Length: 456
Image 1 (cartoon, rainbow, N blue to C red):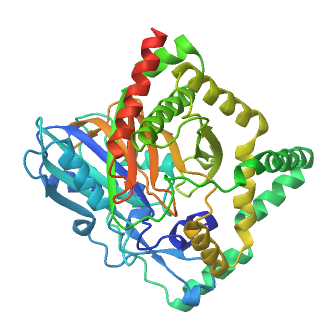
Image 2: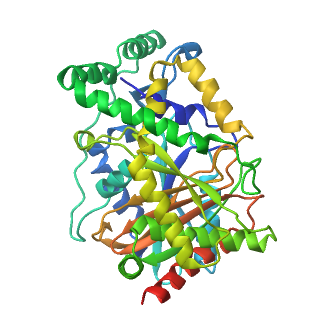
Image 3: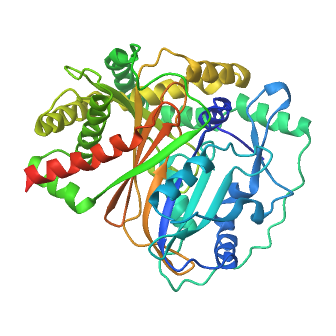
């Protein structure tokens, strides 16, 4: 048994019928599609490297402490690895619609919290894998590691052997509660932190002072915002994508300055500008505040799959018509965020909830997710992926578009995933509130194109 961290447990607690807290994506491969048995053999050979894929969540009686991970004695790969096909003509629209429907379905909490769909019938002699995994298992960065583990580095890799896994006996409710309470009363993180503080008190004091300053600096972003981009969210999802090449983004960076993140956020600002303009909303002086998750996983935590995420906030200058001014405005904010260490503030706030009773944490996270007083209007998450080709059953992965969920009152979120020289934007929206999601996606691609023209 392993007790979930506070942050991992929070992703379970905020989940509701209208808020599905799983992440994932759509990976498109060169054809022809392999037989189901070949993909199954590939997955079976990798399960030993990802133990969570054969474990389920057990909640403590009456929510008295955090949930724990236990082996699922009824694990069946055929339940999690599914097979489907697109209706004719099997184009990108049909694939996006399928993904929206699959992602709108909540994962079964009585089983390991993941699914993988083999999708045939995609035009151009291609096929796809749609994967979804609950956010309590992984954050975006470690999910990338899981993708690398599940796929192969070259087309000739033979499938691994089954490891002969047998589930450990399922614990009783009393054993689950005892384990969770013990872990909660003696958190390893706190003990490790105290040991580190004893070894290096001056450095720890300096970090605490920096964090305090960051909290003060970030107070302006805690003011509520009101926008057509926020509001009630229903149970259904729209999902679409945009794309660019890393070569183009690097050319923009070389010609105009800034970082890859600056270029990406400037292009997304153009997308939101087009979206709001198409809705006849005033643009003068308008900004769209986005929360940008930041990984705070340290080098010593490489290979772990728990969540280690903080956040910063950026006001995207959608009211600025000139693309160069938008890029400069984003770059100035990102530079200021780095210097003021606002990402540290988010990590401190996360750590402060470490000793909160599980029941109160659950109520607090649900209240935050349902609150109409939002302090940001969208979420933008950028995850670097492997920059080498990956293969499934000998077929090369051409592109992988990410999926992240909408939550609370946020109606649109944007995820970016880089792979083998390709930059993929996955955009999730509430089905009823965002029928114009493709205006945003087209605007992102137009934002890249106009910056590239200026740079070259």
